[in-house]
Image 1 (spheres, rainbow, N blue to C red):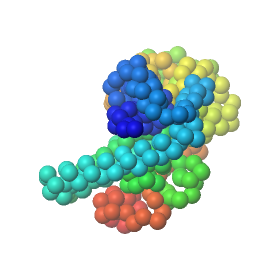
Image 2 (cartoon, rainbow, N blue to C red):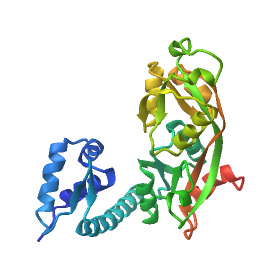
Image 3 (cartoon, rainbow, N blue to C red):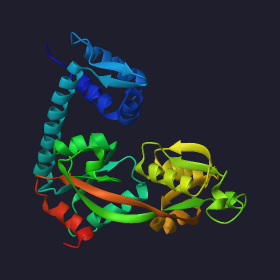
Image 4 (cartoon, rainbow, N blue to C red):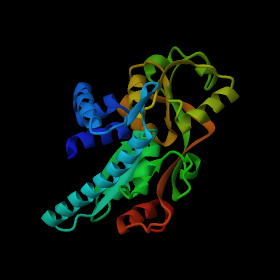
Length: 296
């Protein structure tokens, strides 16, 4: 039996992206196309590879074995592609970074800017996924480092080193069109106000919930949004107040027209670079991390 490479790739992406629809969006294909290819791939096996778990697809035991083989195979394909590029254009230095989807986009940009300003700068590759998937990619050495809003240990991963890159207070922002409808001083004016909050899985959300409870504030939650850029976009339209790092205030005010109401005292967001504990970093990774640790 000869497996179809494209079918295997679609299966791999469906598992990595967490479903048919997100995989279709990532590949710029229709969900119907992905589903059809997935069925053809499944027909090669005597048992199901995936099973429904609510709205998500979960790997069966056989599916886990197939996915593990696919992971190894596509890692080798990526390595071969890099080799081919280097053969065409000389030695190409790459810095492969994973950005956890809970990370604020502005924070990711700010943290990676020093890498782009290196002379000569490496070719930067940034992949955004959930933290668990990125840590798996890191373990298979498909990434050099992962940016996250929590250390690896808190994600149940003990085989890694977590380097603290930045600490900043969490702040509350609002569009001027909504500010006039908020009564009283900060933070009391947030009580009953429309709110755009990070998703429940976000580490920052847990800290924010504790701060709101401590201050006796019960906002009207309009939306819970995992994507920080989308949350700010809703905030720009005046749908509610939103949160973002305090040190990004100038960028947020300029890009989204929002104003900072105040800071959540005692609520700090911390951003980490997670690397493999037993693998020495390459020169570009060391230089980039050195900008934050003072060893550059």
